[in-house]
Image (cartoon, rainbow, N blue to C red; front, side, top):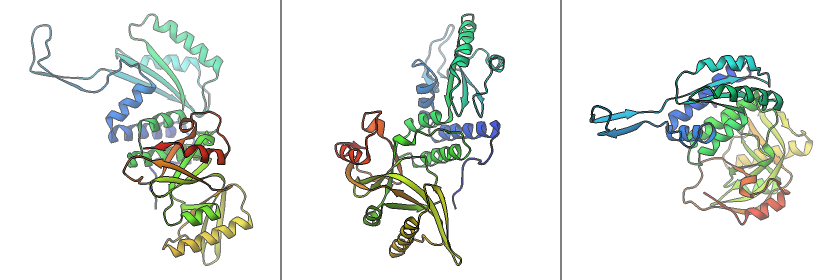
Length: 337
């Protein structure tokens, strides 16, 4: 049974805020360095240096103490909405939450960016406010998805624990509608597929335990022996579990057809041959249009311990994602760590 890190099925702003703060606190607990790198890359200037500094024999005005421990002050104020329902008067009142911190940031967080006219109006007012302040306030308007993607950027494939937390946060956001328009079109999800690779490729279906969280993705890649060996575009996701009364299906995406029911039955039988229980444990079946052979090599020595998400716009260096067969062809000339 999977333990979720974040509450689900709540639409109130305080739950969304609490879950987001929990994500950030987990990142800080996991790695303060990566937490501050995230803050610096997204919300603060290059001069921002929040880490604790240990100094020996630092000269002050009247003396030279043996050692000092200092940290630059900063404050982030967050206002969360479940839609673009921000209004200037409330945001102006929030400015009183700041005092004499060196770095001040106000984040407005919602499923969608603030409407341009509304944003421009507040930014113009804030600019005038900052003209009379020795330490200006920076306003960042962002979305739940952008925040999660920014955290993903400071993680790598060895951050297994934090990747699991982030995936569960993304799953929560999808479940509660905090990511209304997904950018799944550009993501390739790599899955380990050792002994099942031949069946997966020939049948056009991949299966995994349904309790596992995942972020939305349009493309699925199968990994074996130091390389992603095949990729396909996901056209359906269906969960299934067998009981004495038969098999119960749930079509999460795409149509539940007789052909797909038959493929699920074949997958259950394939699982039996490898000692996997796909019958009494609910599994999720990813159906692709076709798996195309590729050779997207991992160049570092350690094998991956689980899933990996690739942004194809970055890997292929294009905003225009080609057809699946062409992606498979281009990936042969690419590598990853």
